[in-house]
Image (tube, rainbow, N blue to C red; front, side):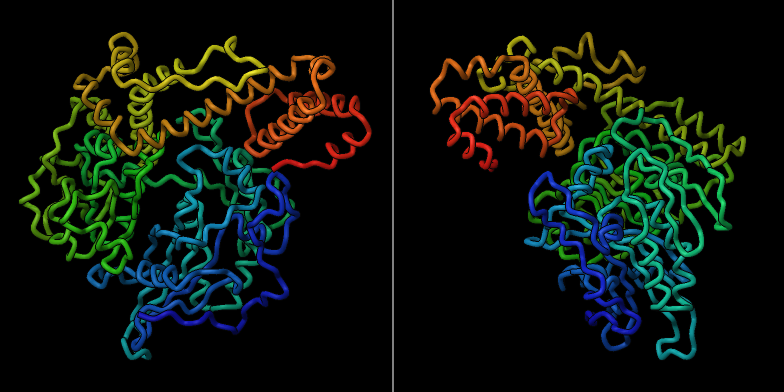
Length: 589
């Protein structure tokens, strides 16, 4: 395998369109949009990966030309952009992968994009350590080539987990790209560079090669389980418009069909951050199933690593397949038969056959013991010795079976399944939310002249005591060992990630309440009773608090910042001229 230099023909000049360097001159101050800033808000770059008889897989083209990828990142993209040879993917195949960004190269996002990220649901926030790759792979017979086949992938590299959006883009542009090549790709990138920023909550019109995609990115303020329908508006021009019902969701029912009777056990395994490997016949099935698993605990964020498509060439291959230590908390999607032997020691293996929507009621498949899994040819099912904490919900099984019998549309089946997972996750997480909210100090304990109080410590035993009267039984009829499930969850990466987020939110709320308490004080009157040294110290502290509040977007009343600035100005004006000049020029650190 080798990495070629990006092709020069038809390439855009880096000099004519400067890249957006994401470093900010000063935090909290947004830079004006530069050429390629709009493109960078959606994509890092577009790659073309081809197959060379001498070099193997090789990156042939990178757009825009100034896009930066390390050699390690290019190598990852090369191997992950092609299905394993045993997959036999003739024709066109779409899938996605996820890989680590090289260390030492993590630039902060443009401040505008940071702000947009804050408004996203936690499950859609960008992970600074990872990229997604969205692939359109074509393999067709071609007698004019030595190998007898044309093999090429068009790959979109992005920080955004918007699988449905980018797969739709690829379906529209890739077939034409394989005919028209690089000039067409240049035009595609130019279109993306005219897209509006990915603002959550707004209907966005995204033009791409003759059509307009209408999309809406969810916000953290959306009510969970409610899908906002994108409305069509009157078009004056003749361009075709298509409305995407989602930017990120996969076909949940289709993905879970092969393991229909085990959806609740799989939900538990994902919730607890257990090591899971999905063995599938192609990258399409593996990537969709892994993403379906990760999404089944929404609105809770899956905080461990997950790889929708993982190969033996991956840089983490040794780390994830070693037998010298327990498998890590990760979900892997694989297609190479070699993994059936290499990952035999993993505790939970999901075997997926070719995914089809059932024309008849799925037959019940028992959970199989791991020793029965010899090769990837083994029958579809779940291979594990795990015993679920909760009793199985027979109602959802009956409801979905009835849908199959009545030929209910797959979309409707997915909506039912997604609502089931949402209600199950909410029933589980609400008691935790309620207990953690009780750790917040009372507002009357916040004094403007003291540092904000700290949150009370999380106590596992105190939390467990609340479950008797305020546990999941209030919202769920499911029986089982809920206490055991909670104890296991409290040791998991998903709990750590969730609790850190809640801690940060509540700490910011305390900071905001402290600033509001300061605003309600007569600070000018206070300054008249203190020395100049104390006054200067107060002014500098207040300036610093204002700076932090702006940078962190603290949840304050709209006029708090203005009031505090007026207090600062009034105090400074009451000081001698020489001190006024110094304090007016003094910034914050």
